[in-house]
Image (cartoon, rainbow, N blue to C red):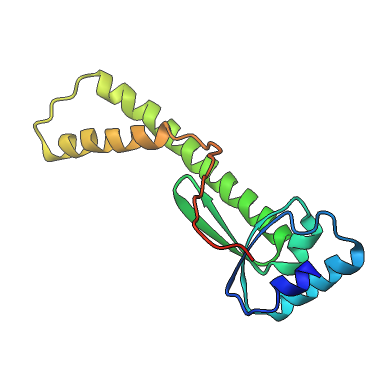
Length: 149
């Protein structure tokens, strides 16, 4: 079969697009078993959460130019990502509160004569940037030159 031909060679990276589509349960179980036996890195596009749980022990997510690494299966990834986003939102909320307070101080047109005032003015702009942060979904495009199996 085509799958047998493709998996005859040892690979370190497998790129798979919806690998469980059009496979019966027996073939999905074979594929899961194969991937769990081999030391391979997978770049997967799949909507099969059960497959992800079965074959992934570490998930890397590239989001807003940052790489987040989650150890564990897909369920663990969902839990850890939710906690990370909650923490980020909390930090942004704190920065917004601090920004409101500092904006009020800046509107009084403080004199930047003292070191403390200069420092506080500089800090204001840093707080402003953090307060204006938004958590957005971004799209990633990859262009890879490779030979197909």
